[in-house]
Image (cartoon, rainbow, N blue to C red; front, side):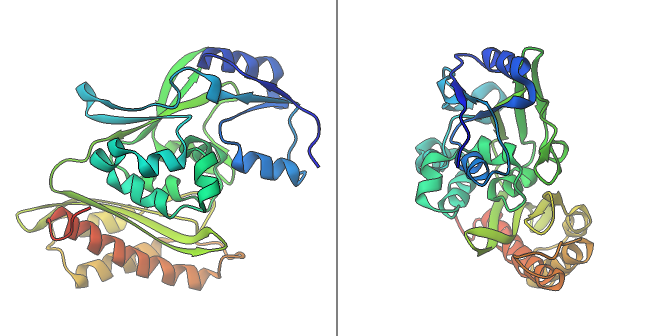
Length: 292
């Protein structure tokens, strides 16, 4: 049963930050609230003050910032909006592809991308895609100003992030992918959450891989980059043997946690399979064999 609480409706990020400063540990910000309300109903956490950031002007905008060649997704944008947005479909189709398979329609309609990231639940779809996305960062705003934090510095531990107590995440920035770069996202799902998931970004020029980014998630407390496997790919010709070698490197470097979603060995095998599939599809998209 939910304990009584007060809902605050700030009009600016600075007002939201002031409220967080005022009420401290007794307050938290929310947008969709799909994750927050579940843990509050279960009695796992309690807040006397909830700060609804959806009342902040223009926080639900999706914009292309032309001078930076960046897609900016505001904190109030729901999963469903991303899934169905023509702007996303034209400029960042992998986001729409990822969102279509996230949880269920109810969650996608109410929940937000930013909310999912700030909650830092380990079995997250968006966290892995953001971790792999070249140059992506999170915009954090408070009365102290605005700072931008890359994903590999944002996720610290289970349900822990680098967001300060008086900060709210106001947007996510996704640099537009250059020509010749392909991307892919694969996962294996149990109980509506991934048991393991992999995102891959691959550039191919003149028949050789010139850059690669691989992120793995849902097998431990936080998503992570598989840099050893990335380095193995660069300079090589795309092919199944190379994908399998890279997938083995990713699995060997992994440190999965045994839990309800699978044993260590099971998750390592999932990583092998998902990495190989993601690399193959990303490479094919980079070479124009498959269009996204």
